[in-house]
Length: 257
Image (cartoon, rainbow, N blue to C red):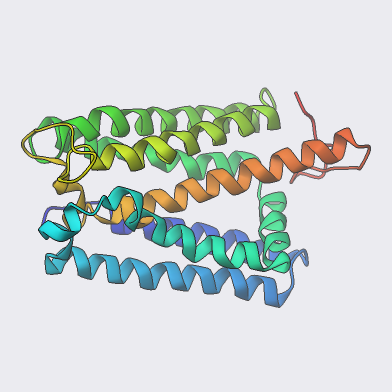
C-alpha cells in the first residue's frame, strides 16, 4: 500500500457537496426531504467506497477472474448507479439537485472540479514506475489539464469574463475525458477481450488499494458533477431562450455569452 490523496479527495468531495446542499436548505430553496435525499446518496457512496477499499485490500481486485472481466466497463458504474437510479426515479431529487447547482456560485463549482489537478499524483507514479504509464499518459495527463482549465475558468467566471456557455463546454469536456475513453482504456492493458498492450507495471495497478478508489469512487463523482452541472446550465439556457426568467446564483439575469 502506497500513500495516496484519494481518500482525502473523496472526503473533500463529500464535504463540499454536503455544504452546498446545506447552504441551499438554509436559503429555503430545498425541502428537508430533498436535503435528506442528497445526504442519503452521500452515505450510500461512502459505504460503497468502504466496500471498494475492502475489495482492494483483500486482493479481490487483483484476482484473475476480476481483471479479465472488463472491470473498466462495470465496476466503475457502481457509484454512478447509486446516484442515477434515485435521480431518474425521483423528480423531487432532480429538482433538489438543480436548486443546489442554482444556489452555488458557478465559479465555486468550477473550483471544485479543479481538484482534478490531483491527477498529477497518478502521472508522477506512472513515470516513476509505480503505475501504468499508458494510463498516466492518455487519461491522467488530460485529467490534470482539465483540472488546470477549470481553475482558470473559475477565475474568469468570477471576474465575469466567461459565462455559462463556457461552463457548459468545460463540463462536457470533463465528462468525455472519462466517459467513454477512461473506462475503455482501463481494459486495454488487462486480460480479456480488449487486451491490446503490455507494460510493466500494468494497468492492474489501478485496482490496487488505495488507487482503486479513483476509478470506483472519486472519478465517477467528478463525472456526475460534470453531467448534472452541464444538464442544468443547458436547461437554464433553454428556459431563457423560451422567454422564461433565469437567474444565476448571484441573483442577476443569466447570460448565454
